[in-house]
Image (cartoon, rainbow, N blue to C red; front, side, top):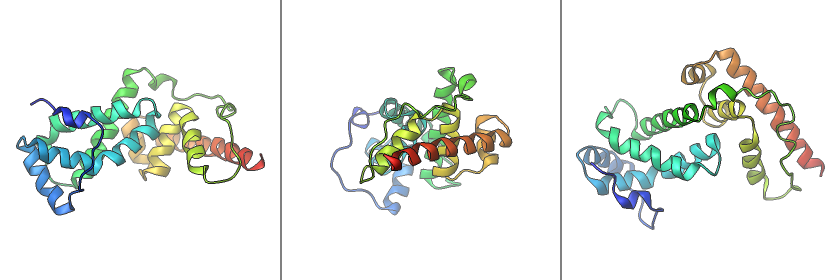
Length: 194
C-alpha cells in the first residue's frame, strides 16, 4: 500500500487520540486504515522528530521523520503487541537512523578525536535561550559522541544496549559519552562566562 499524501504534509490541527483509541488505531492501521495511521502519526511525530533532530541534526530531521513513518506504514503488520506501539515505533526509528548513518559512511568517521569540536559554536548570554544553545551544542558534537550522548543521557538506553545497537563495545560507548559530556561542559561554561 502507498503511504497517504497527508502523512507527508505538515501536521494539521486535530484532536489527539486517547491511548485507548491509539491501541485500536494500531489494529486498524495494520488492516490498511489510513485514517487510523494518520492518528498514530499525530500522536508520535513529535517524539520521533525530536529523536531525528538530536541524532542527525536539524537539517535531516524532517525528511528522516517521514522516512521512519513510511517504514512504520510498511512494517506495521509485523507489530506483535509485545510492547507499546510507541516503543516499537521508537526502536524502528533508531534502526532507520542507524541505517542512514551507515549509508552516509559516517560510521567509520564517528570517532572524531578533535578536542576543539565545539569551539566554533557561538555562545549566548544567560537567558531563556539555554535550551536552544544546548540543542545547537549537541548538534555540533562529533557524530559518535552525539549519538551516544543522545541515546544514553537523553533517551535512557544503557551502555550495553547502545553497544549492541551500534555494534561497538560498551567501553567505547562509555568513553564517547564521557567525551561528549566534557565537550558540552566546556561549551556551557564558556557560555556562562560571556
